Amino acid sequence: AGQDCSLEEVGQHLKKLYSNTVDTLNGKVHDFKAKQKTIQKYITQHPNSYVALWDLVIDYAIYKNWKNDDDIKMILKNALLLSSTIKKTTTYKTLLENIKKDLELSSGKTFPNIRLNSTDSLIPIVKKNKFTLVDFWFSGCVPCVRQFPSYKVSYDLNKSKGFEIIGISIDGKKEEADWHKIIQTMNLNWLQYLATNNLTRKLHISGFPTNYLLDNEGKIIKVNIEPEELERFLQQNLH
Image 1 (cartoon, rainbow, N blue to C red):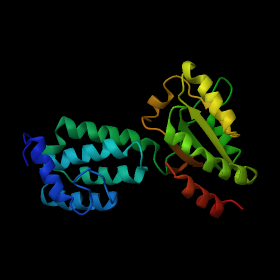
Image 2 (image 1 turned 90 degrees about the vertical axis):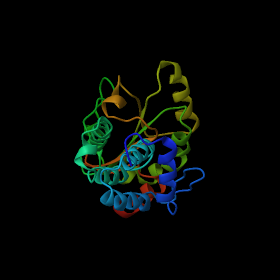
Image 3 (image 1 turned 120 degrees about the vertical axis):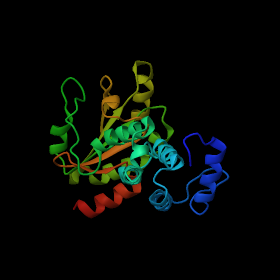
């Protein structure tokens, strides 16, 4: 496919390519990993494809905010298969730069000792517990708030065993009352902070909720762990 191919041509091509893994009517991905395997096979045969490049860009834009870093690593792996010609384009370079920034906070990496307020920093709190969930949210985020009942069950069951949650909200001054209201009405009894200036931008966090499960040393165990998976992990690892 050439760089000047039309969006209609790209769309038709992708519909054929992903007929088994994507709903071609609404674009919903049935199986992300299967889709990436399909594009991997395609790129191996067509490494100079701009269609493949833009499909990876679209996948990254959609999935970087809602999925875990394993998905982003799959996109990176496929991007690296593209030809040297493709790799010289601004689109490719921008994609790689953004992926690498996101993966600075991926599984196995150490979470930075961020300042939580004028007196508290993250790592000293982390070191007092076996596992800590750092949860970035805000009061107007429905998916964020929807997770809280499950978090509360996990927290109440495991707090005494060495589990902590640090909630960090990006709510501003205008939303601070809403932030307090949610904490009080839902009885969120774990640590709660308002994000300091530009914190999420510095951490390259642009989607919410975003969470990081950390061990006692601040090493990232999992990014964007689901509540059910978190509960299973705690049951297996806290006694």
